[in-house]
Amino acid sequence: MNYLSTRGHPDRKRFCEILLEGLAPDGGLYLPEHYPQVDTATLAKWRDLPYAELAFEILSLYIDDIPPADLKAICAKTYTPEVFGSEEIVPLRELEDGVYLEALSNGPTLAFKDMAMQLLGNLFEYELARRGAELNILGATSGDTGSAAEYAMRGKKGVRVFMTSPDGRMSPFQQAQMFSLQDENIHNIAITGVFDDCQDIVKAVSNDLGFKRKYRIGTVNSINWARLLAQVVYYFAGYFQATAGNDKPVSFTVPSGNFGNVCAGHVARMMGLPIHTLVVATNENDVLDEFFRTGIYRVRAAADTHETSSPSMDISKASNFERFVFDLVGRDAAKLRSLFVDHLGSQARFDLSGEPAFKQAAERFGFKSSRSTHADRLATIRDTEKRFATLVDPHTADGLKAAREHLTPGVPMVVLETALPIKFAATLVEALGHEPARPARFEGIEALPKRVVKLPADVEAVKAYIAQNCD
Ligand SMILES: *Cc1c(COP(=O)(O)O)cnc(C)c1O
Image (cartoon, rainbow, N blue to C red; front, side):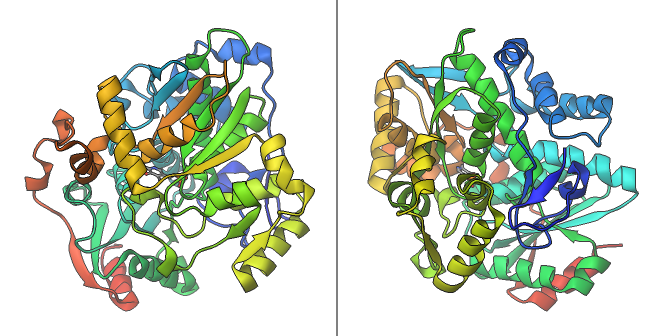
C-alpha cells in the first residue's frame, strides 16, 4: 500500500515512512492510494474475532512494511482487557430502542484517544528500535491529547515526551493524570499563558529546522494517519455488536472536533462497511455543522472560538477535514489545493454550496450534522441519568442529542462515547448536583506528587529545557 498527499505531491510513501512524519512535504495530509474493499464474506469471517485480531486484519490491509507476525504481536500487546477494562475492548450497550452507546473511553486516560494513541506508542517503539533512532515528541495540550500521548509513551524506549500545557487551566483531574507520571521519559511543561501560547511555542520550535533535526523533534497530533487507521477498527467492532449476522446498515454519531474520529468512520464506510449515516456532532464551535448544512467552510479566528463545557471539541478549524474534502472533490488535488491553499489562505473560507460535490456529502458519503449548546448538554446529561440511570460526559451528550435528530427507522444508531464523565466532573455537578463515580485506580490522584516544570511563554526557554533533557 502506498500513501499520497492530498495536495498532489508526486512522491509515494509506505506506512512506516509516514508513521513518524506529520504533514506531507507540500503541507497536505497522507491518505492511502485506494481504500481496500471488504466484502460480505470477509465481514462474516471477521464478525467473531477478538478485538486485537480484528485490528490486525484491518491494519494488515494498510501496512505491508511490518512483518505480519510482528504486527500481530503489536496489536495483541495493545488491545488487552487489562488496558481497556473488558474482553470486548469497546463494549456496546443499548440505551433505548435502537440507540446504542459504544464505550471507547475505558483506556488509561478515560477518553477515546487512548484507542489510537496506545497503538501509536507501540508502533513508535517498534519502528524506532528497528531504525536505531530516537524521537522527542513535542506537543501542546489543553487536556485529552496530552494525557493520552503520555500514557502511551511512558517507559517506551527511544521516545521522550515534552508536553506543554497552559499553567492552571486544565481541570484538576486532568492535571493530576498528567503530572503524577513519574517516568523519566515524560516531561510536563506548564507554560504561564493560555493554550494558544503553547501551540505557538510548538510551532516555533518545529519551524526551527536546525533545532528540529538536531533534537529529532516529532509530534503525535491528530493528522497522523496511524491514529486515524487505529480508529477505523472500532467502527467495525461497533457494527458487529449492533447487528446479528445480517448485512443491515448501521449509523454512527460522532462528537467531533478535529474531524479525526469521524474521518475514520468515513474510511470504514469507503471500505464497504455498511454504514448508513455518519452524524457529525458539534458544540457551539460549529465550523463542521455549518459546512454540512450550507456547503460553506468558514475557519474561525482564535477570538471567535468559544470555551465550552465540551472543551475537546473547541476548535476553530478541523485539521483532518482536508482528507474528507479530498474524497468529496473526487481526489482532484488541484481542486483541493485551490480550496485549502488559495481560498482558506486568503479568505479563511471556501464555498461549495453551488457545486455538485456538496450534494454528495450527504447523498454519496452519508454525512449529516447537528449542533448543541451548553443548555442542551445539561438537559441530555439529566435526561440520560433520569431515564436510563446512565451518566454520560458532556461530549457524549452532544453526540446523543445529535443522534436523536437523525434516526432512521430500522437502522441502529451507535453513539460513540468519547470520554468518561469523571473527566468533566464540574459539568456533571452542574447538571446533576453530584459527582460522577471515579474508577478505583484514580482515587486520590490529585494528592500524588507532581512532576512538572513551570516555564514562561518563551520559545527559547522551552528549547533550552529540551536541549538539557535530551542526553
Ligand atoms: C478529541 C476529542 C473529541 C474530538 O475528536 P476529533 O477526532 O478531534 O474529532 C471529542 N470528544 C473527546 C472527549 C475528545 O477527547
